Each structure stands twice: as structure tokens, then as C-alpha cells.
Figure 1 (tube, rainbow over the protein chains, first blue to last red):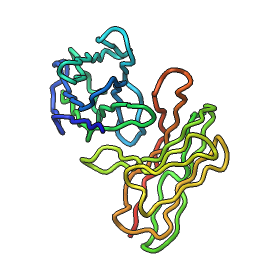
Figure 2: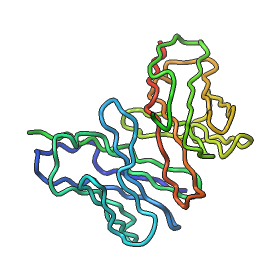
Figure 3: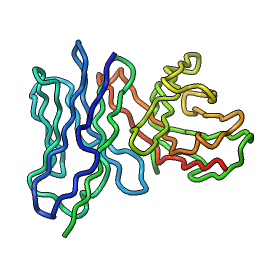
Figure 4: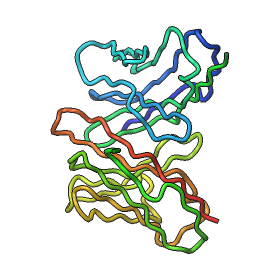
Length: 111
Length: 114
């Protein structure tokens, strides 16, 4: 069995400030890890993923996440956020044929 | 055009009514999924299908049924809707033969059961 914990449900942040969204998972075997983003009134879009190889993965819009096997974490970071980053972010873990999702973290970027 | 489409996008229905949500995809993926999203709970898996002849229950299948009419179509039915089925419903697809478990989501159907 596996579960995903997103440690913060709401993260308010000022524009151009850094942000970190924390995600921990429980699994005794190797997994694939994902971050999805849901902009207001839209579906989920893949932000980035870790399948294998380098433990640091990056997205095209400046987000990065680091897989830490010993701490079973996959935290998401961005050094400088924009208003357009306001969204809900979901961490997900894949083991075999299904994804388990965290409860989500709502990021609100203020000017 | 979107790769994964869902109809309707919004629906209001009454308790006890039967309702069907439809999902179509043009990605050619074998696997399709139905989730519901509730505030503070993330996404929970209702049903999933690996191909037309293979359908499996997810963690919250009670009160729901599905039909995989073709590789590209996967429908979710609420036989007798109840208010606690009010939620945002998402369809998703994946193709693990690519060596990747990424799922691709439709835009969602917002359902209100009165």
C-alpha cells in the first residue's frame, strides 16, 4: 500500500518570493513520482515527473522537484513565483498501474 | 483539439436520477480512469480500465458503474444519484507501454446533485 501526504493545504506567497510545497510518500518499493497543477476552473496538467536517473527534475516554467529516497520525499520548489502560478498543486505516486494523489496544496500568489 | 474530452462539462440533477458522464480520447491509449475530486481530499479513483475487456474497481466504486464501449470511450454512470456524489469528476488516460505512468486528464465534469 502507499499513501501521499502533502504537508501544507494552503500556501500564500508574495510575487517574486520563493515557494516550497512539501510531499512525502510511504512505499517500500520503487515508485514513480509526479506533480500535477490545476489552474482555476481547469483540469490537471502534468508539471514534472521523476521516473529514474537524476533525482532533480525541472519543468519548463521554472519549477523543480527533488526525489529523496531516504526521506521518501518529493518536494516542489520555485525560486521566484508569478501571479500566474496561483493554482492547486497535487503530488502523486505511481506503483504499478495506479496513481495515488495527495490532498493538494493551494498556492495563492499576491502582488 | 483536446486529446481527452468529457461531456457534459456541468450537470445539475436530482436525487434518484440516473446520470451518465462520458469520456473520449484521441491519444490511442489503452488505459482509462475515472476520478472524483472533493475539496481537501485530492483525487480518488472510482474505476479504471486497461482495455475494453478489463475493468477494475477503484477505492470508491460504490454507487458507480462504468462502460468501456471502445478503446477511445469510457463512460461513468450514477444509477441513482445522491447528494454526496456532488463533486468534480475527471477522466484520465495513460499508456504504460511508453515506459511511463503519466496520466493525461480531461477538463472535468462538475456535477451537482440536489
